[in-house]
Length: 242
Image 1 (tube, rainbow, N blue to C red):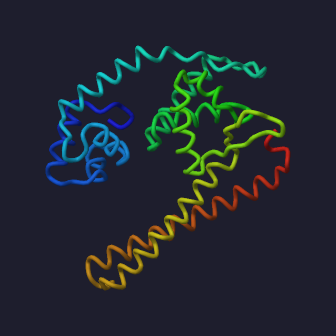
Image 2: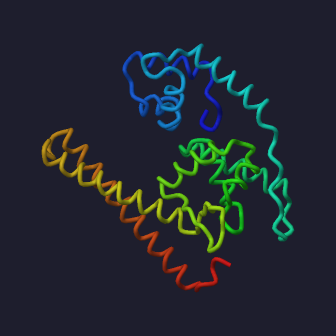
């Protein structure tokens, strides 16, 4: 089921469907998983030509045992003076991390993002993240680079400060949605072109035309929602981030 780890049976299905020549997206659809999950599973276990269900399952169990031994539980994040229950914050951070992973983020990137997002400042140094997550500086660096490439965080160096800060802001998801709108519009243009080339009266052309119609509605709805969000923020005034 989505949200749970792949089972041995899942891996047998993956191996069989790879042998049939199915792509990650179709395999993910059949298993009810994101295509990115299938891609990571196959890539780290021999690739499309070398994937084996038993070998992949045993390798995953070995990695899980090794991680359990190497990574003691992280301490609860410190309270910032707001009277929060540290354990409740830790539990929520873990559940939010799991949600981001289900949405397709690599786990380490999801852990970094969740750690940043639950802080009031929205910023931490590399040393802060290493201490909180109990991982190597290299792991943090790779995750930060990935998130920066996706536009999900920025780097800042305070005046006179020696340590670089990794920062998330209130508009991160807004930028992500607008990026999705732009990608959607590329799909709209391609679908409209497909309808023209194939002929709107043909089954294939009609399929592209219907796709374009749906995606136009999605883009318009998202743009309207983002405009309403911006207007709402403007009405609240500059104190909204305090």
